[in-house]
Image 1 (cartoon, rainbow, N blue to C red):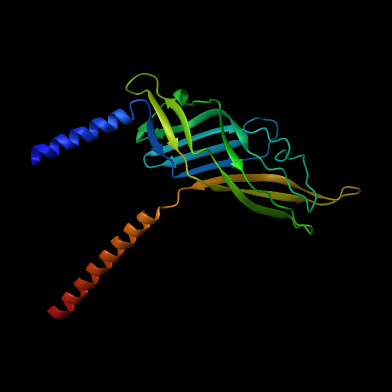
Image 2 (image 1 turned 30 degrees about the horizontal axis):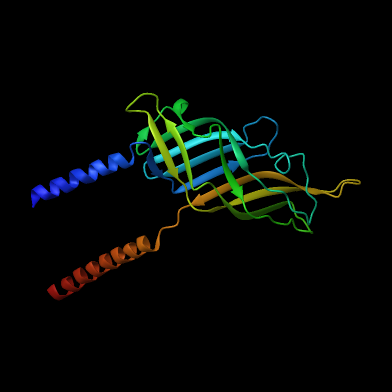
Length: 229
């Protein structure tokens, strides 16, 4: 029996090694992209991708001259043409995948220097504006991101980042009051895309069973102590 278990375990290990011979998959449970006004400096995006044993941070920019340029003002009752689209990467900060740290200088996505996030909805500014306004719309990233990190084997790794299925993009705006012939308008101040993996029903069920079992054990101990008295 012990011999057969050893053989099975060995086959499983070999199968896993073969499955990831070309690339190693890492699950990203939360992706966050912070967007700032495009003031011409180029770097108006920070991002963080995190998951079990994995944390990747970096920065870059998006050429959103149609809505995140602080000089562009939107009239009350109008809708801004939101779009993140392609993110031009300028560099990586921290790169850890599967508990292993990589030199950020060796990190790259396969379609370097780009990755993207898509905004699916829009919103309308209030017709009677106040000083600030915030709104959230549905958004998502690609289902997976491919790339490589590390310089020489065994450090060199081809990877696949499995991304959360969906998320939302929340933006904040400030209202510039009317002055003279100018009727006033909203200017972009900050935005953030967040996608988080929702636990599967099976996982939630197992968690409920586990908590229920703990509760039952506690009740049994309390009952036994009362009887002992």
